[in-house]
Each structure stands twice: as C-alpha cells, then as structure tokens.
Image (cartoon, rainbow, N blue to C red; front, top):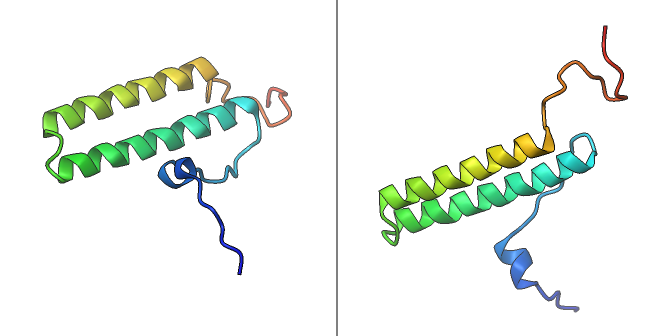
Length: 91
C-alpha cells in the first residue's frame, strides 16, 4: 500500500475548488476569500481558547475584512452589473 505524503501547507491552508465563472479576477478574489476565511477561523479558535483577547481578535478580523474589501474594489468585482457573460451590455 502506497502512503501519500501530506504537504504541511496543504494541511494548514486547504484550498477549495472554484465553481464560478472562470475569470482571472474571480479566481484571485476566491483565493483571497478562502485565505480570509481560514485566518478568521484561526483567530476565532485562538480567542475561544483564551490565547487572544476578544478586543484584539475583533480588531484583527476587522483589519482582514478591510483588506478583503480593498482587494474586491481593486479587482472590480461586481462593478459591471449590467454586463452579460460575453461582455455585451444587456438591454
């Protein structure tokens, strides 16, 4: 039986598959969103375990949220609501 070697980074930072519309900006935002969720999970676990004060956990999550919003704006996700998948303006 063959043993599968697990990469430490794959274990600590798992990535889910992307099922949405495949565009570079969507893929980048999805990766950022997954990283945000992973880091929020770590912060919550540290706070729950008493290793991080609630106020500090809140501030860290707030900073992560601001970073995610900034990347969404930079990638222009959702800024063209009247365009179809082919890039034509819908009537």
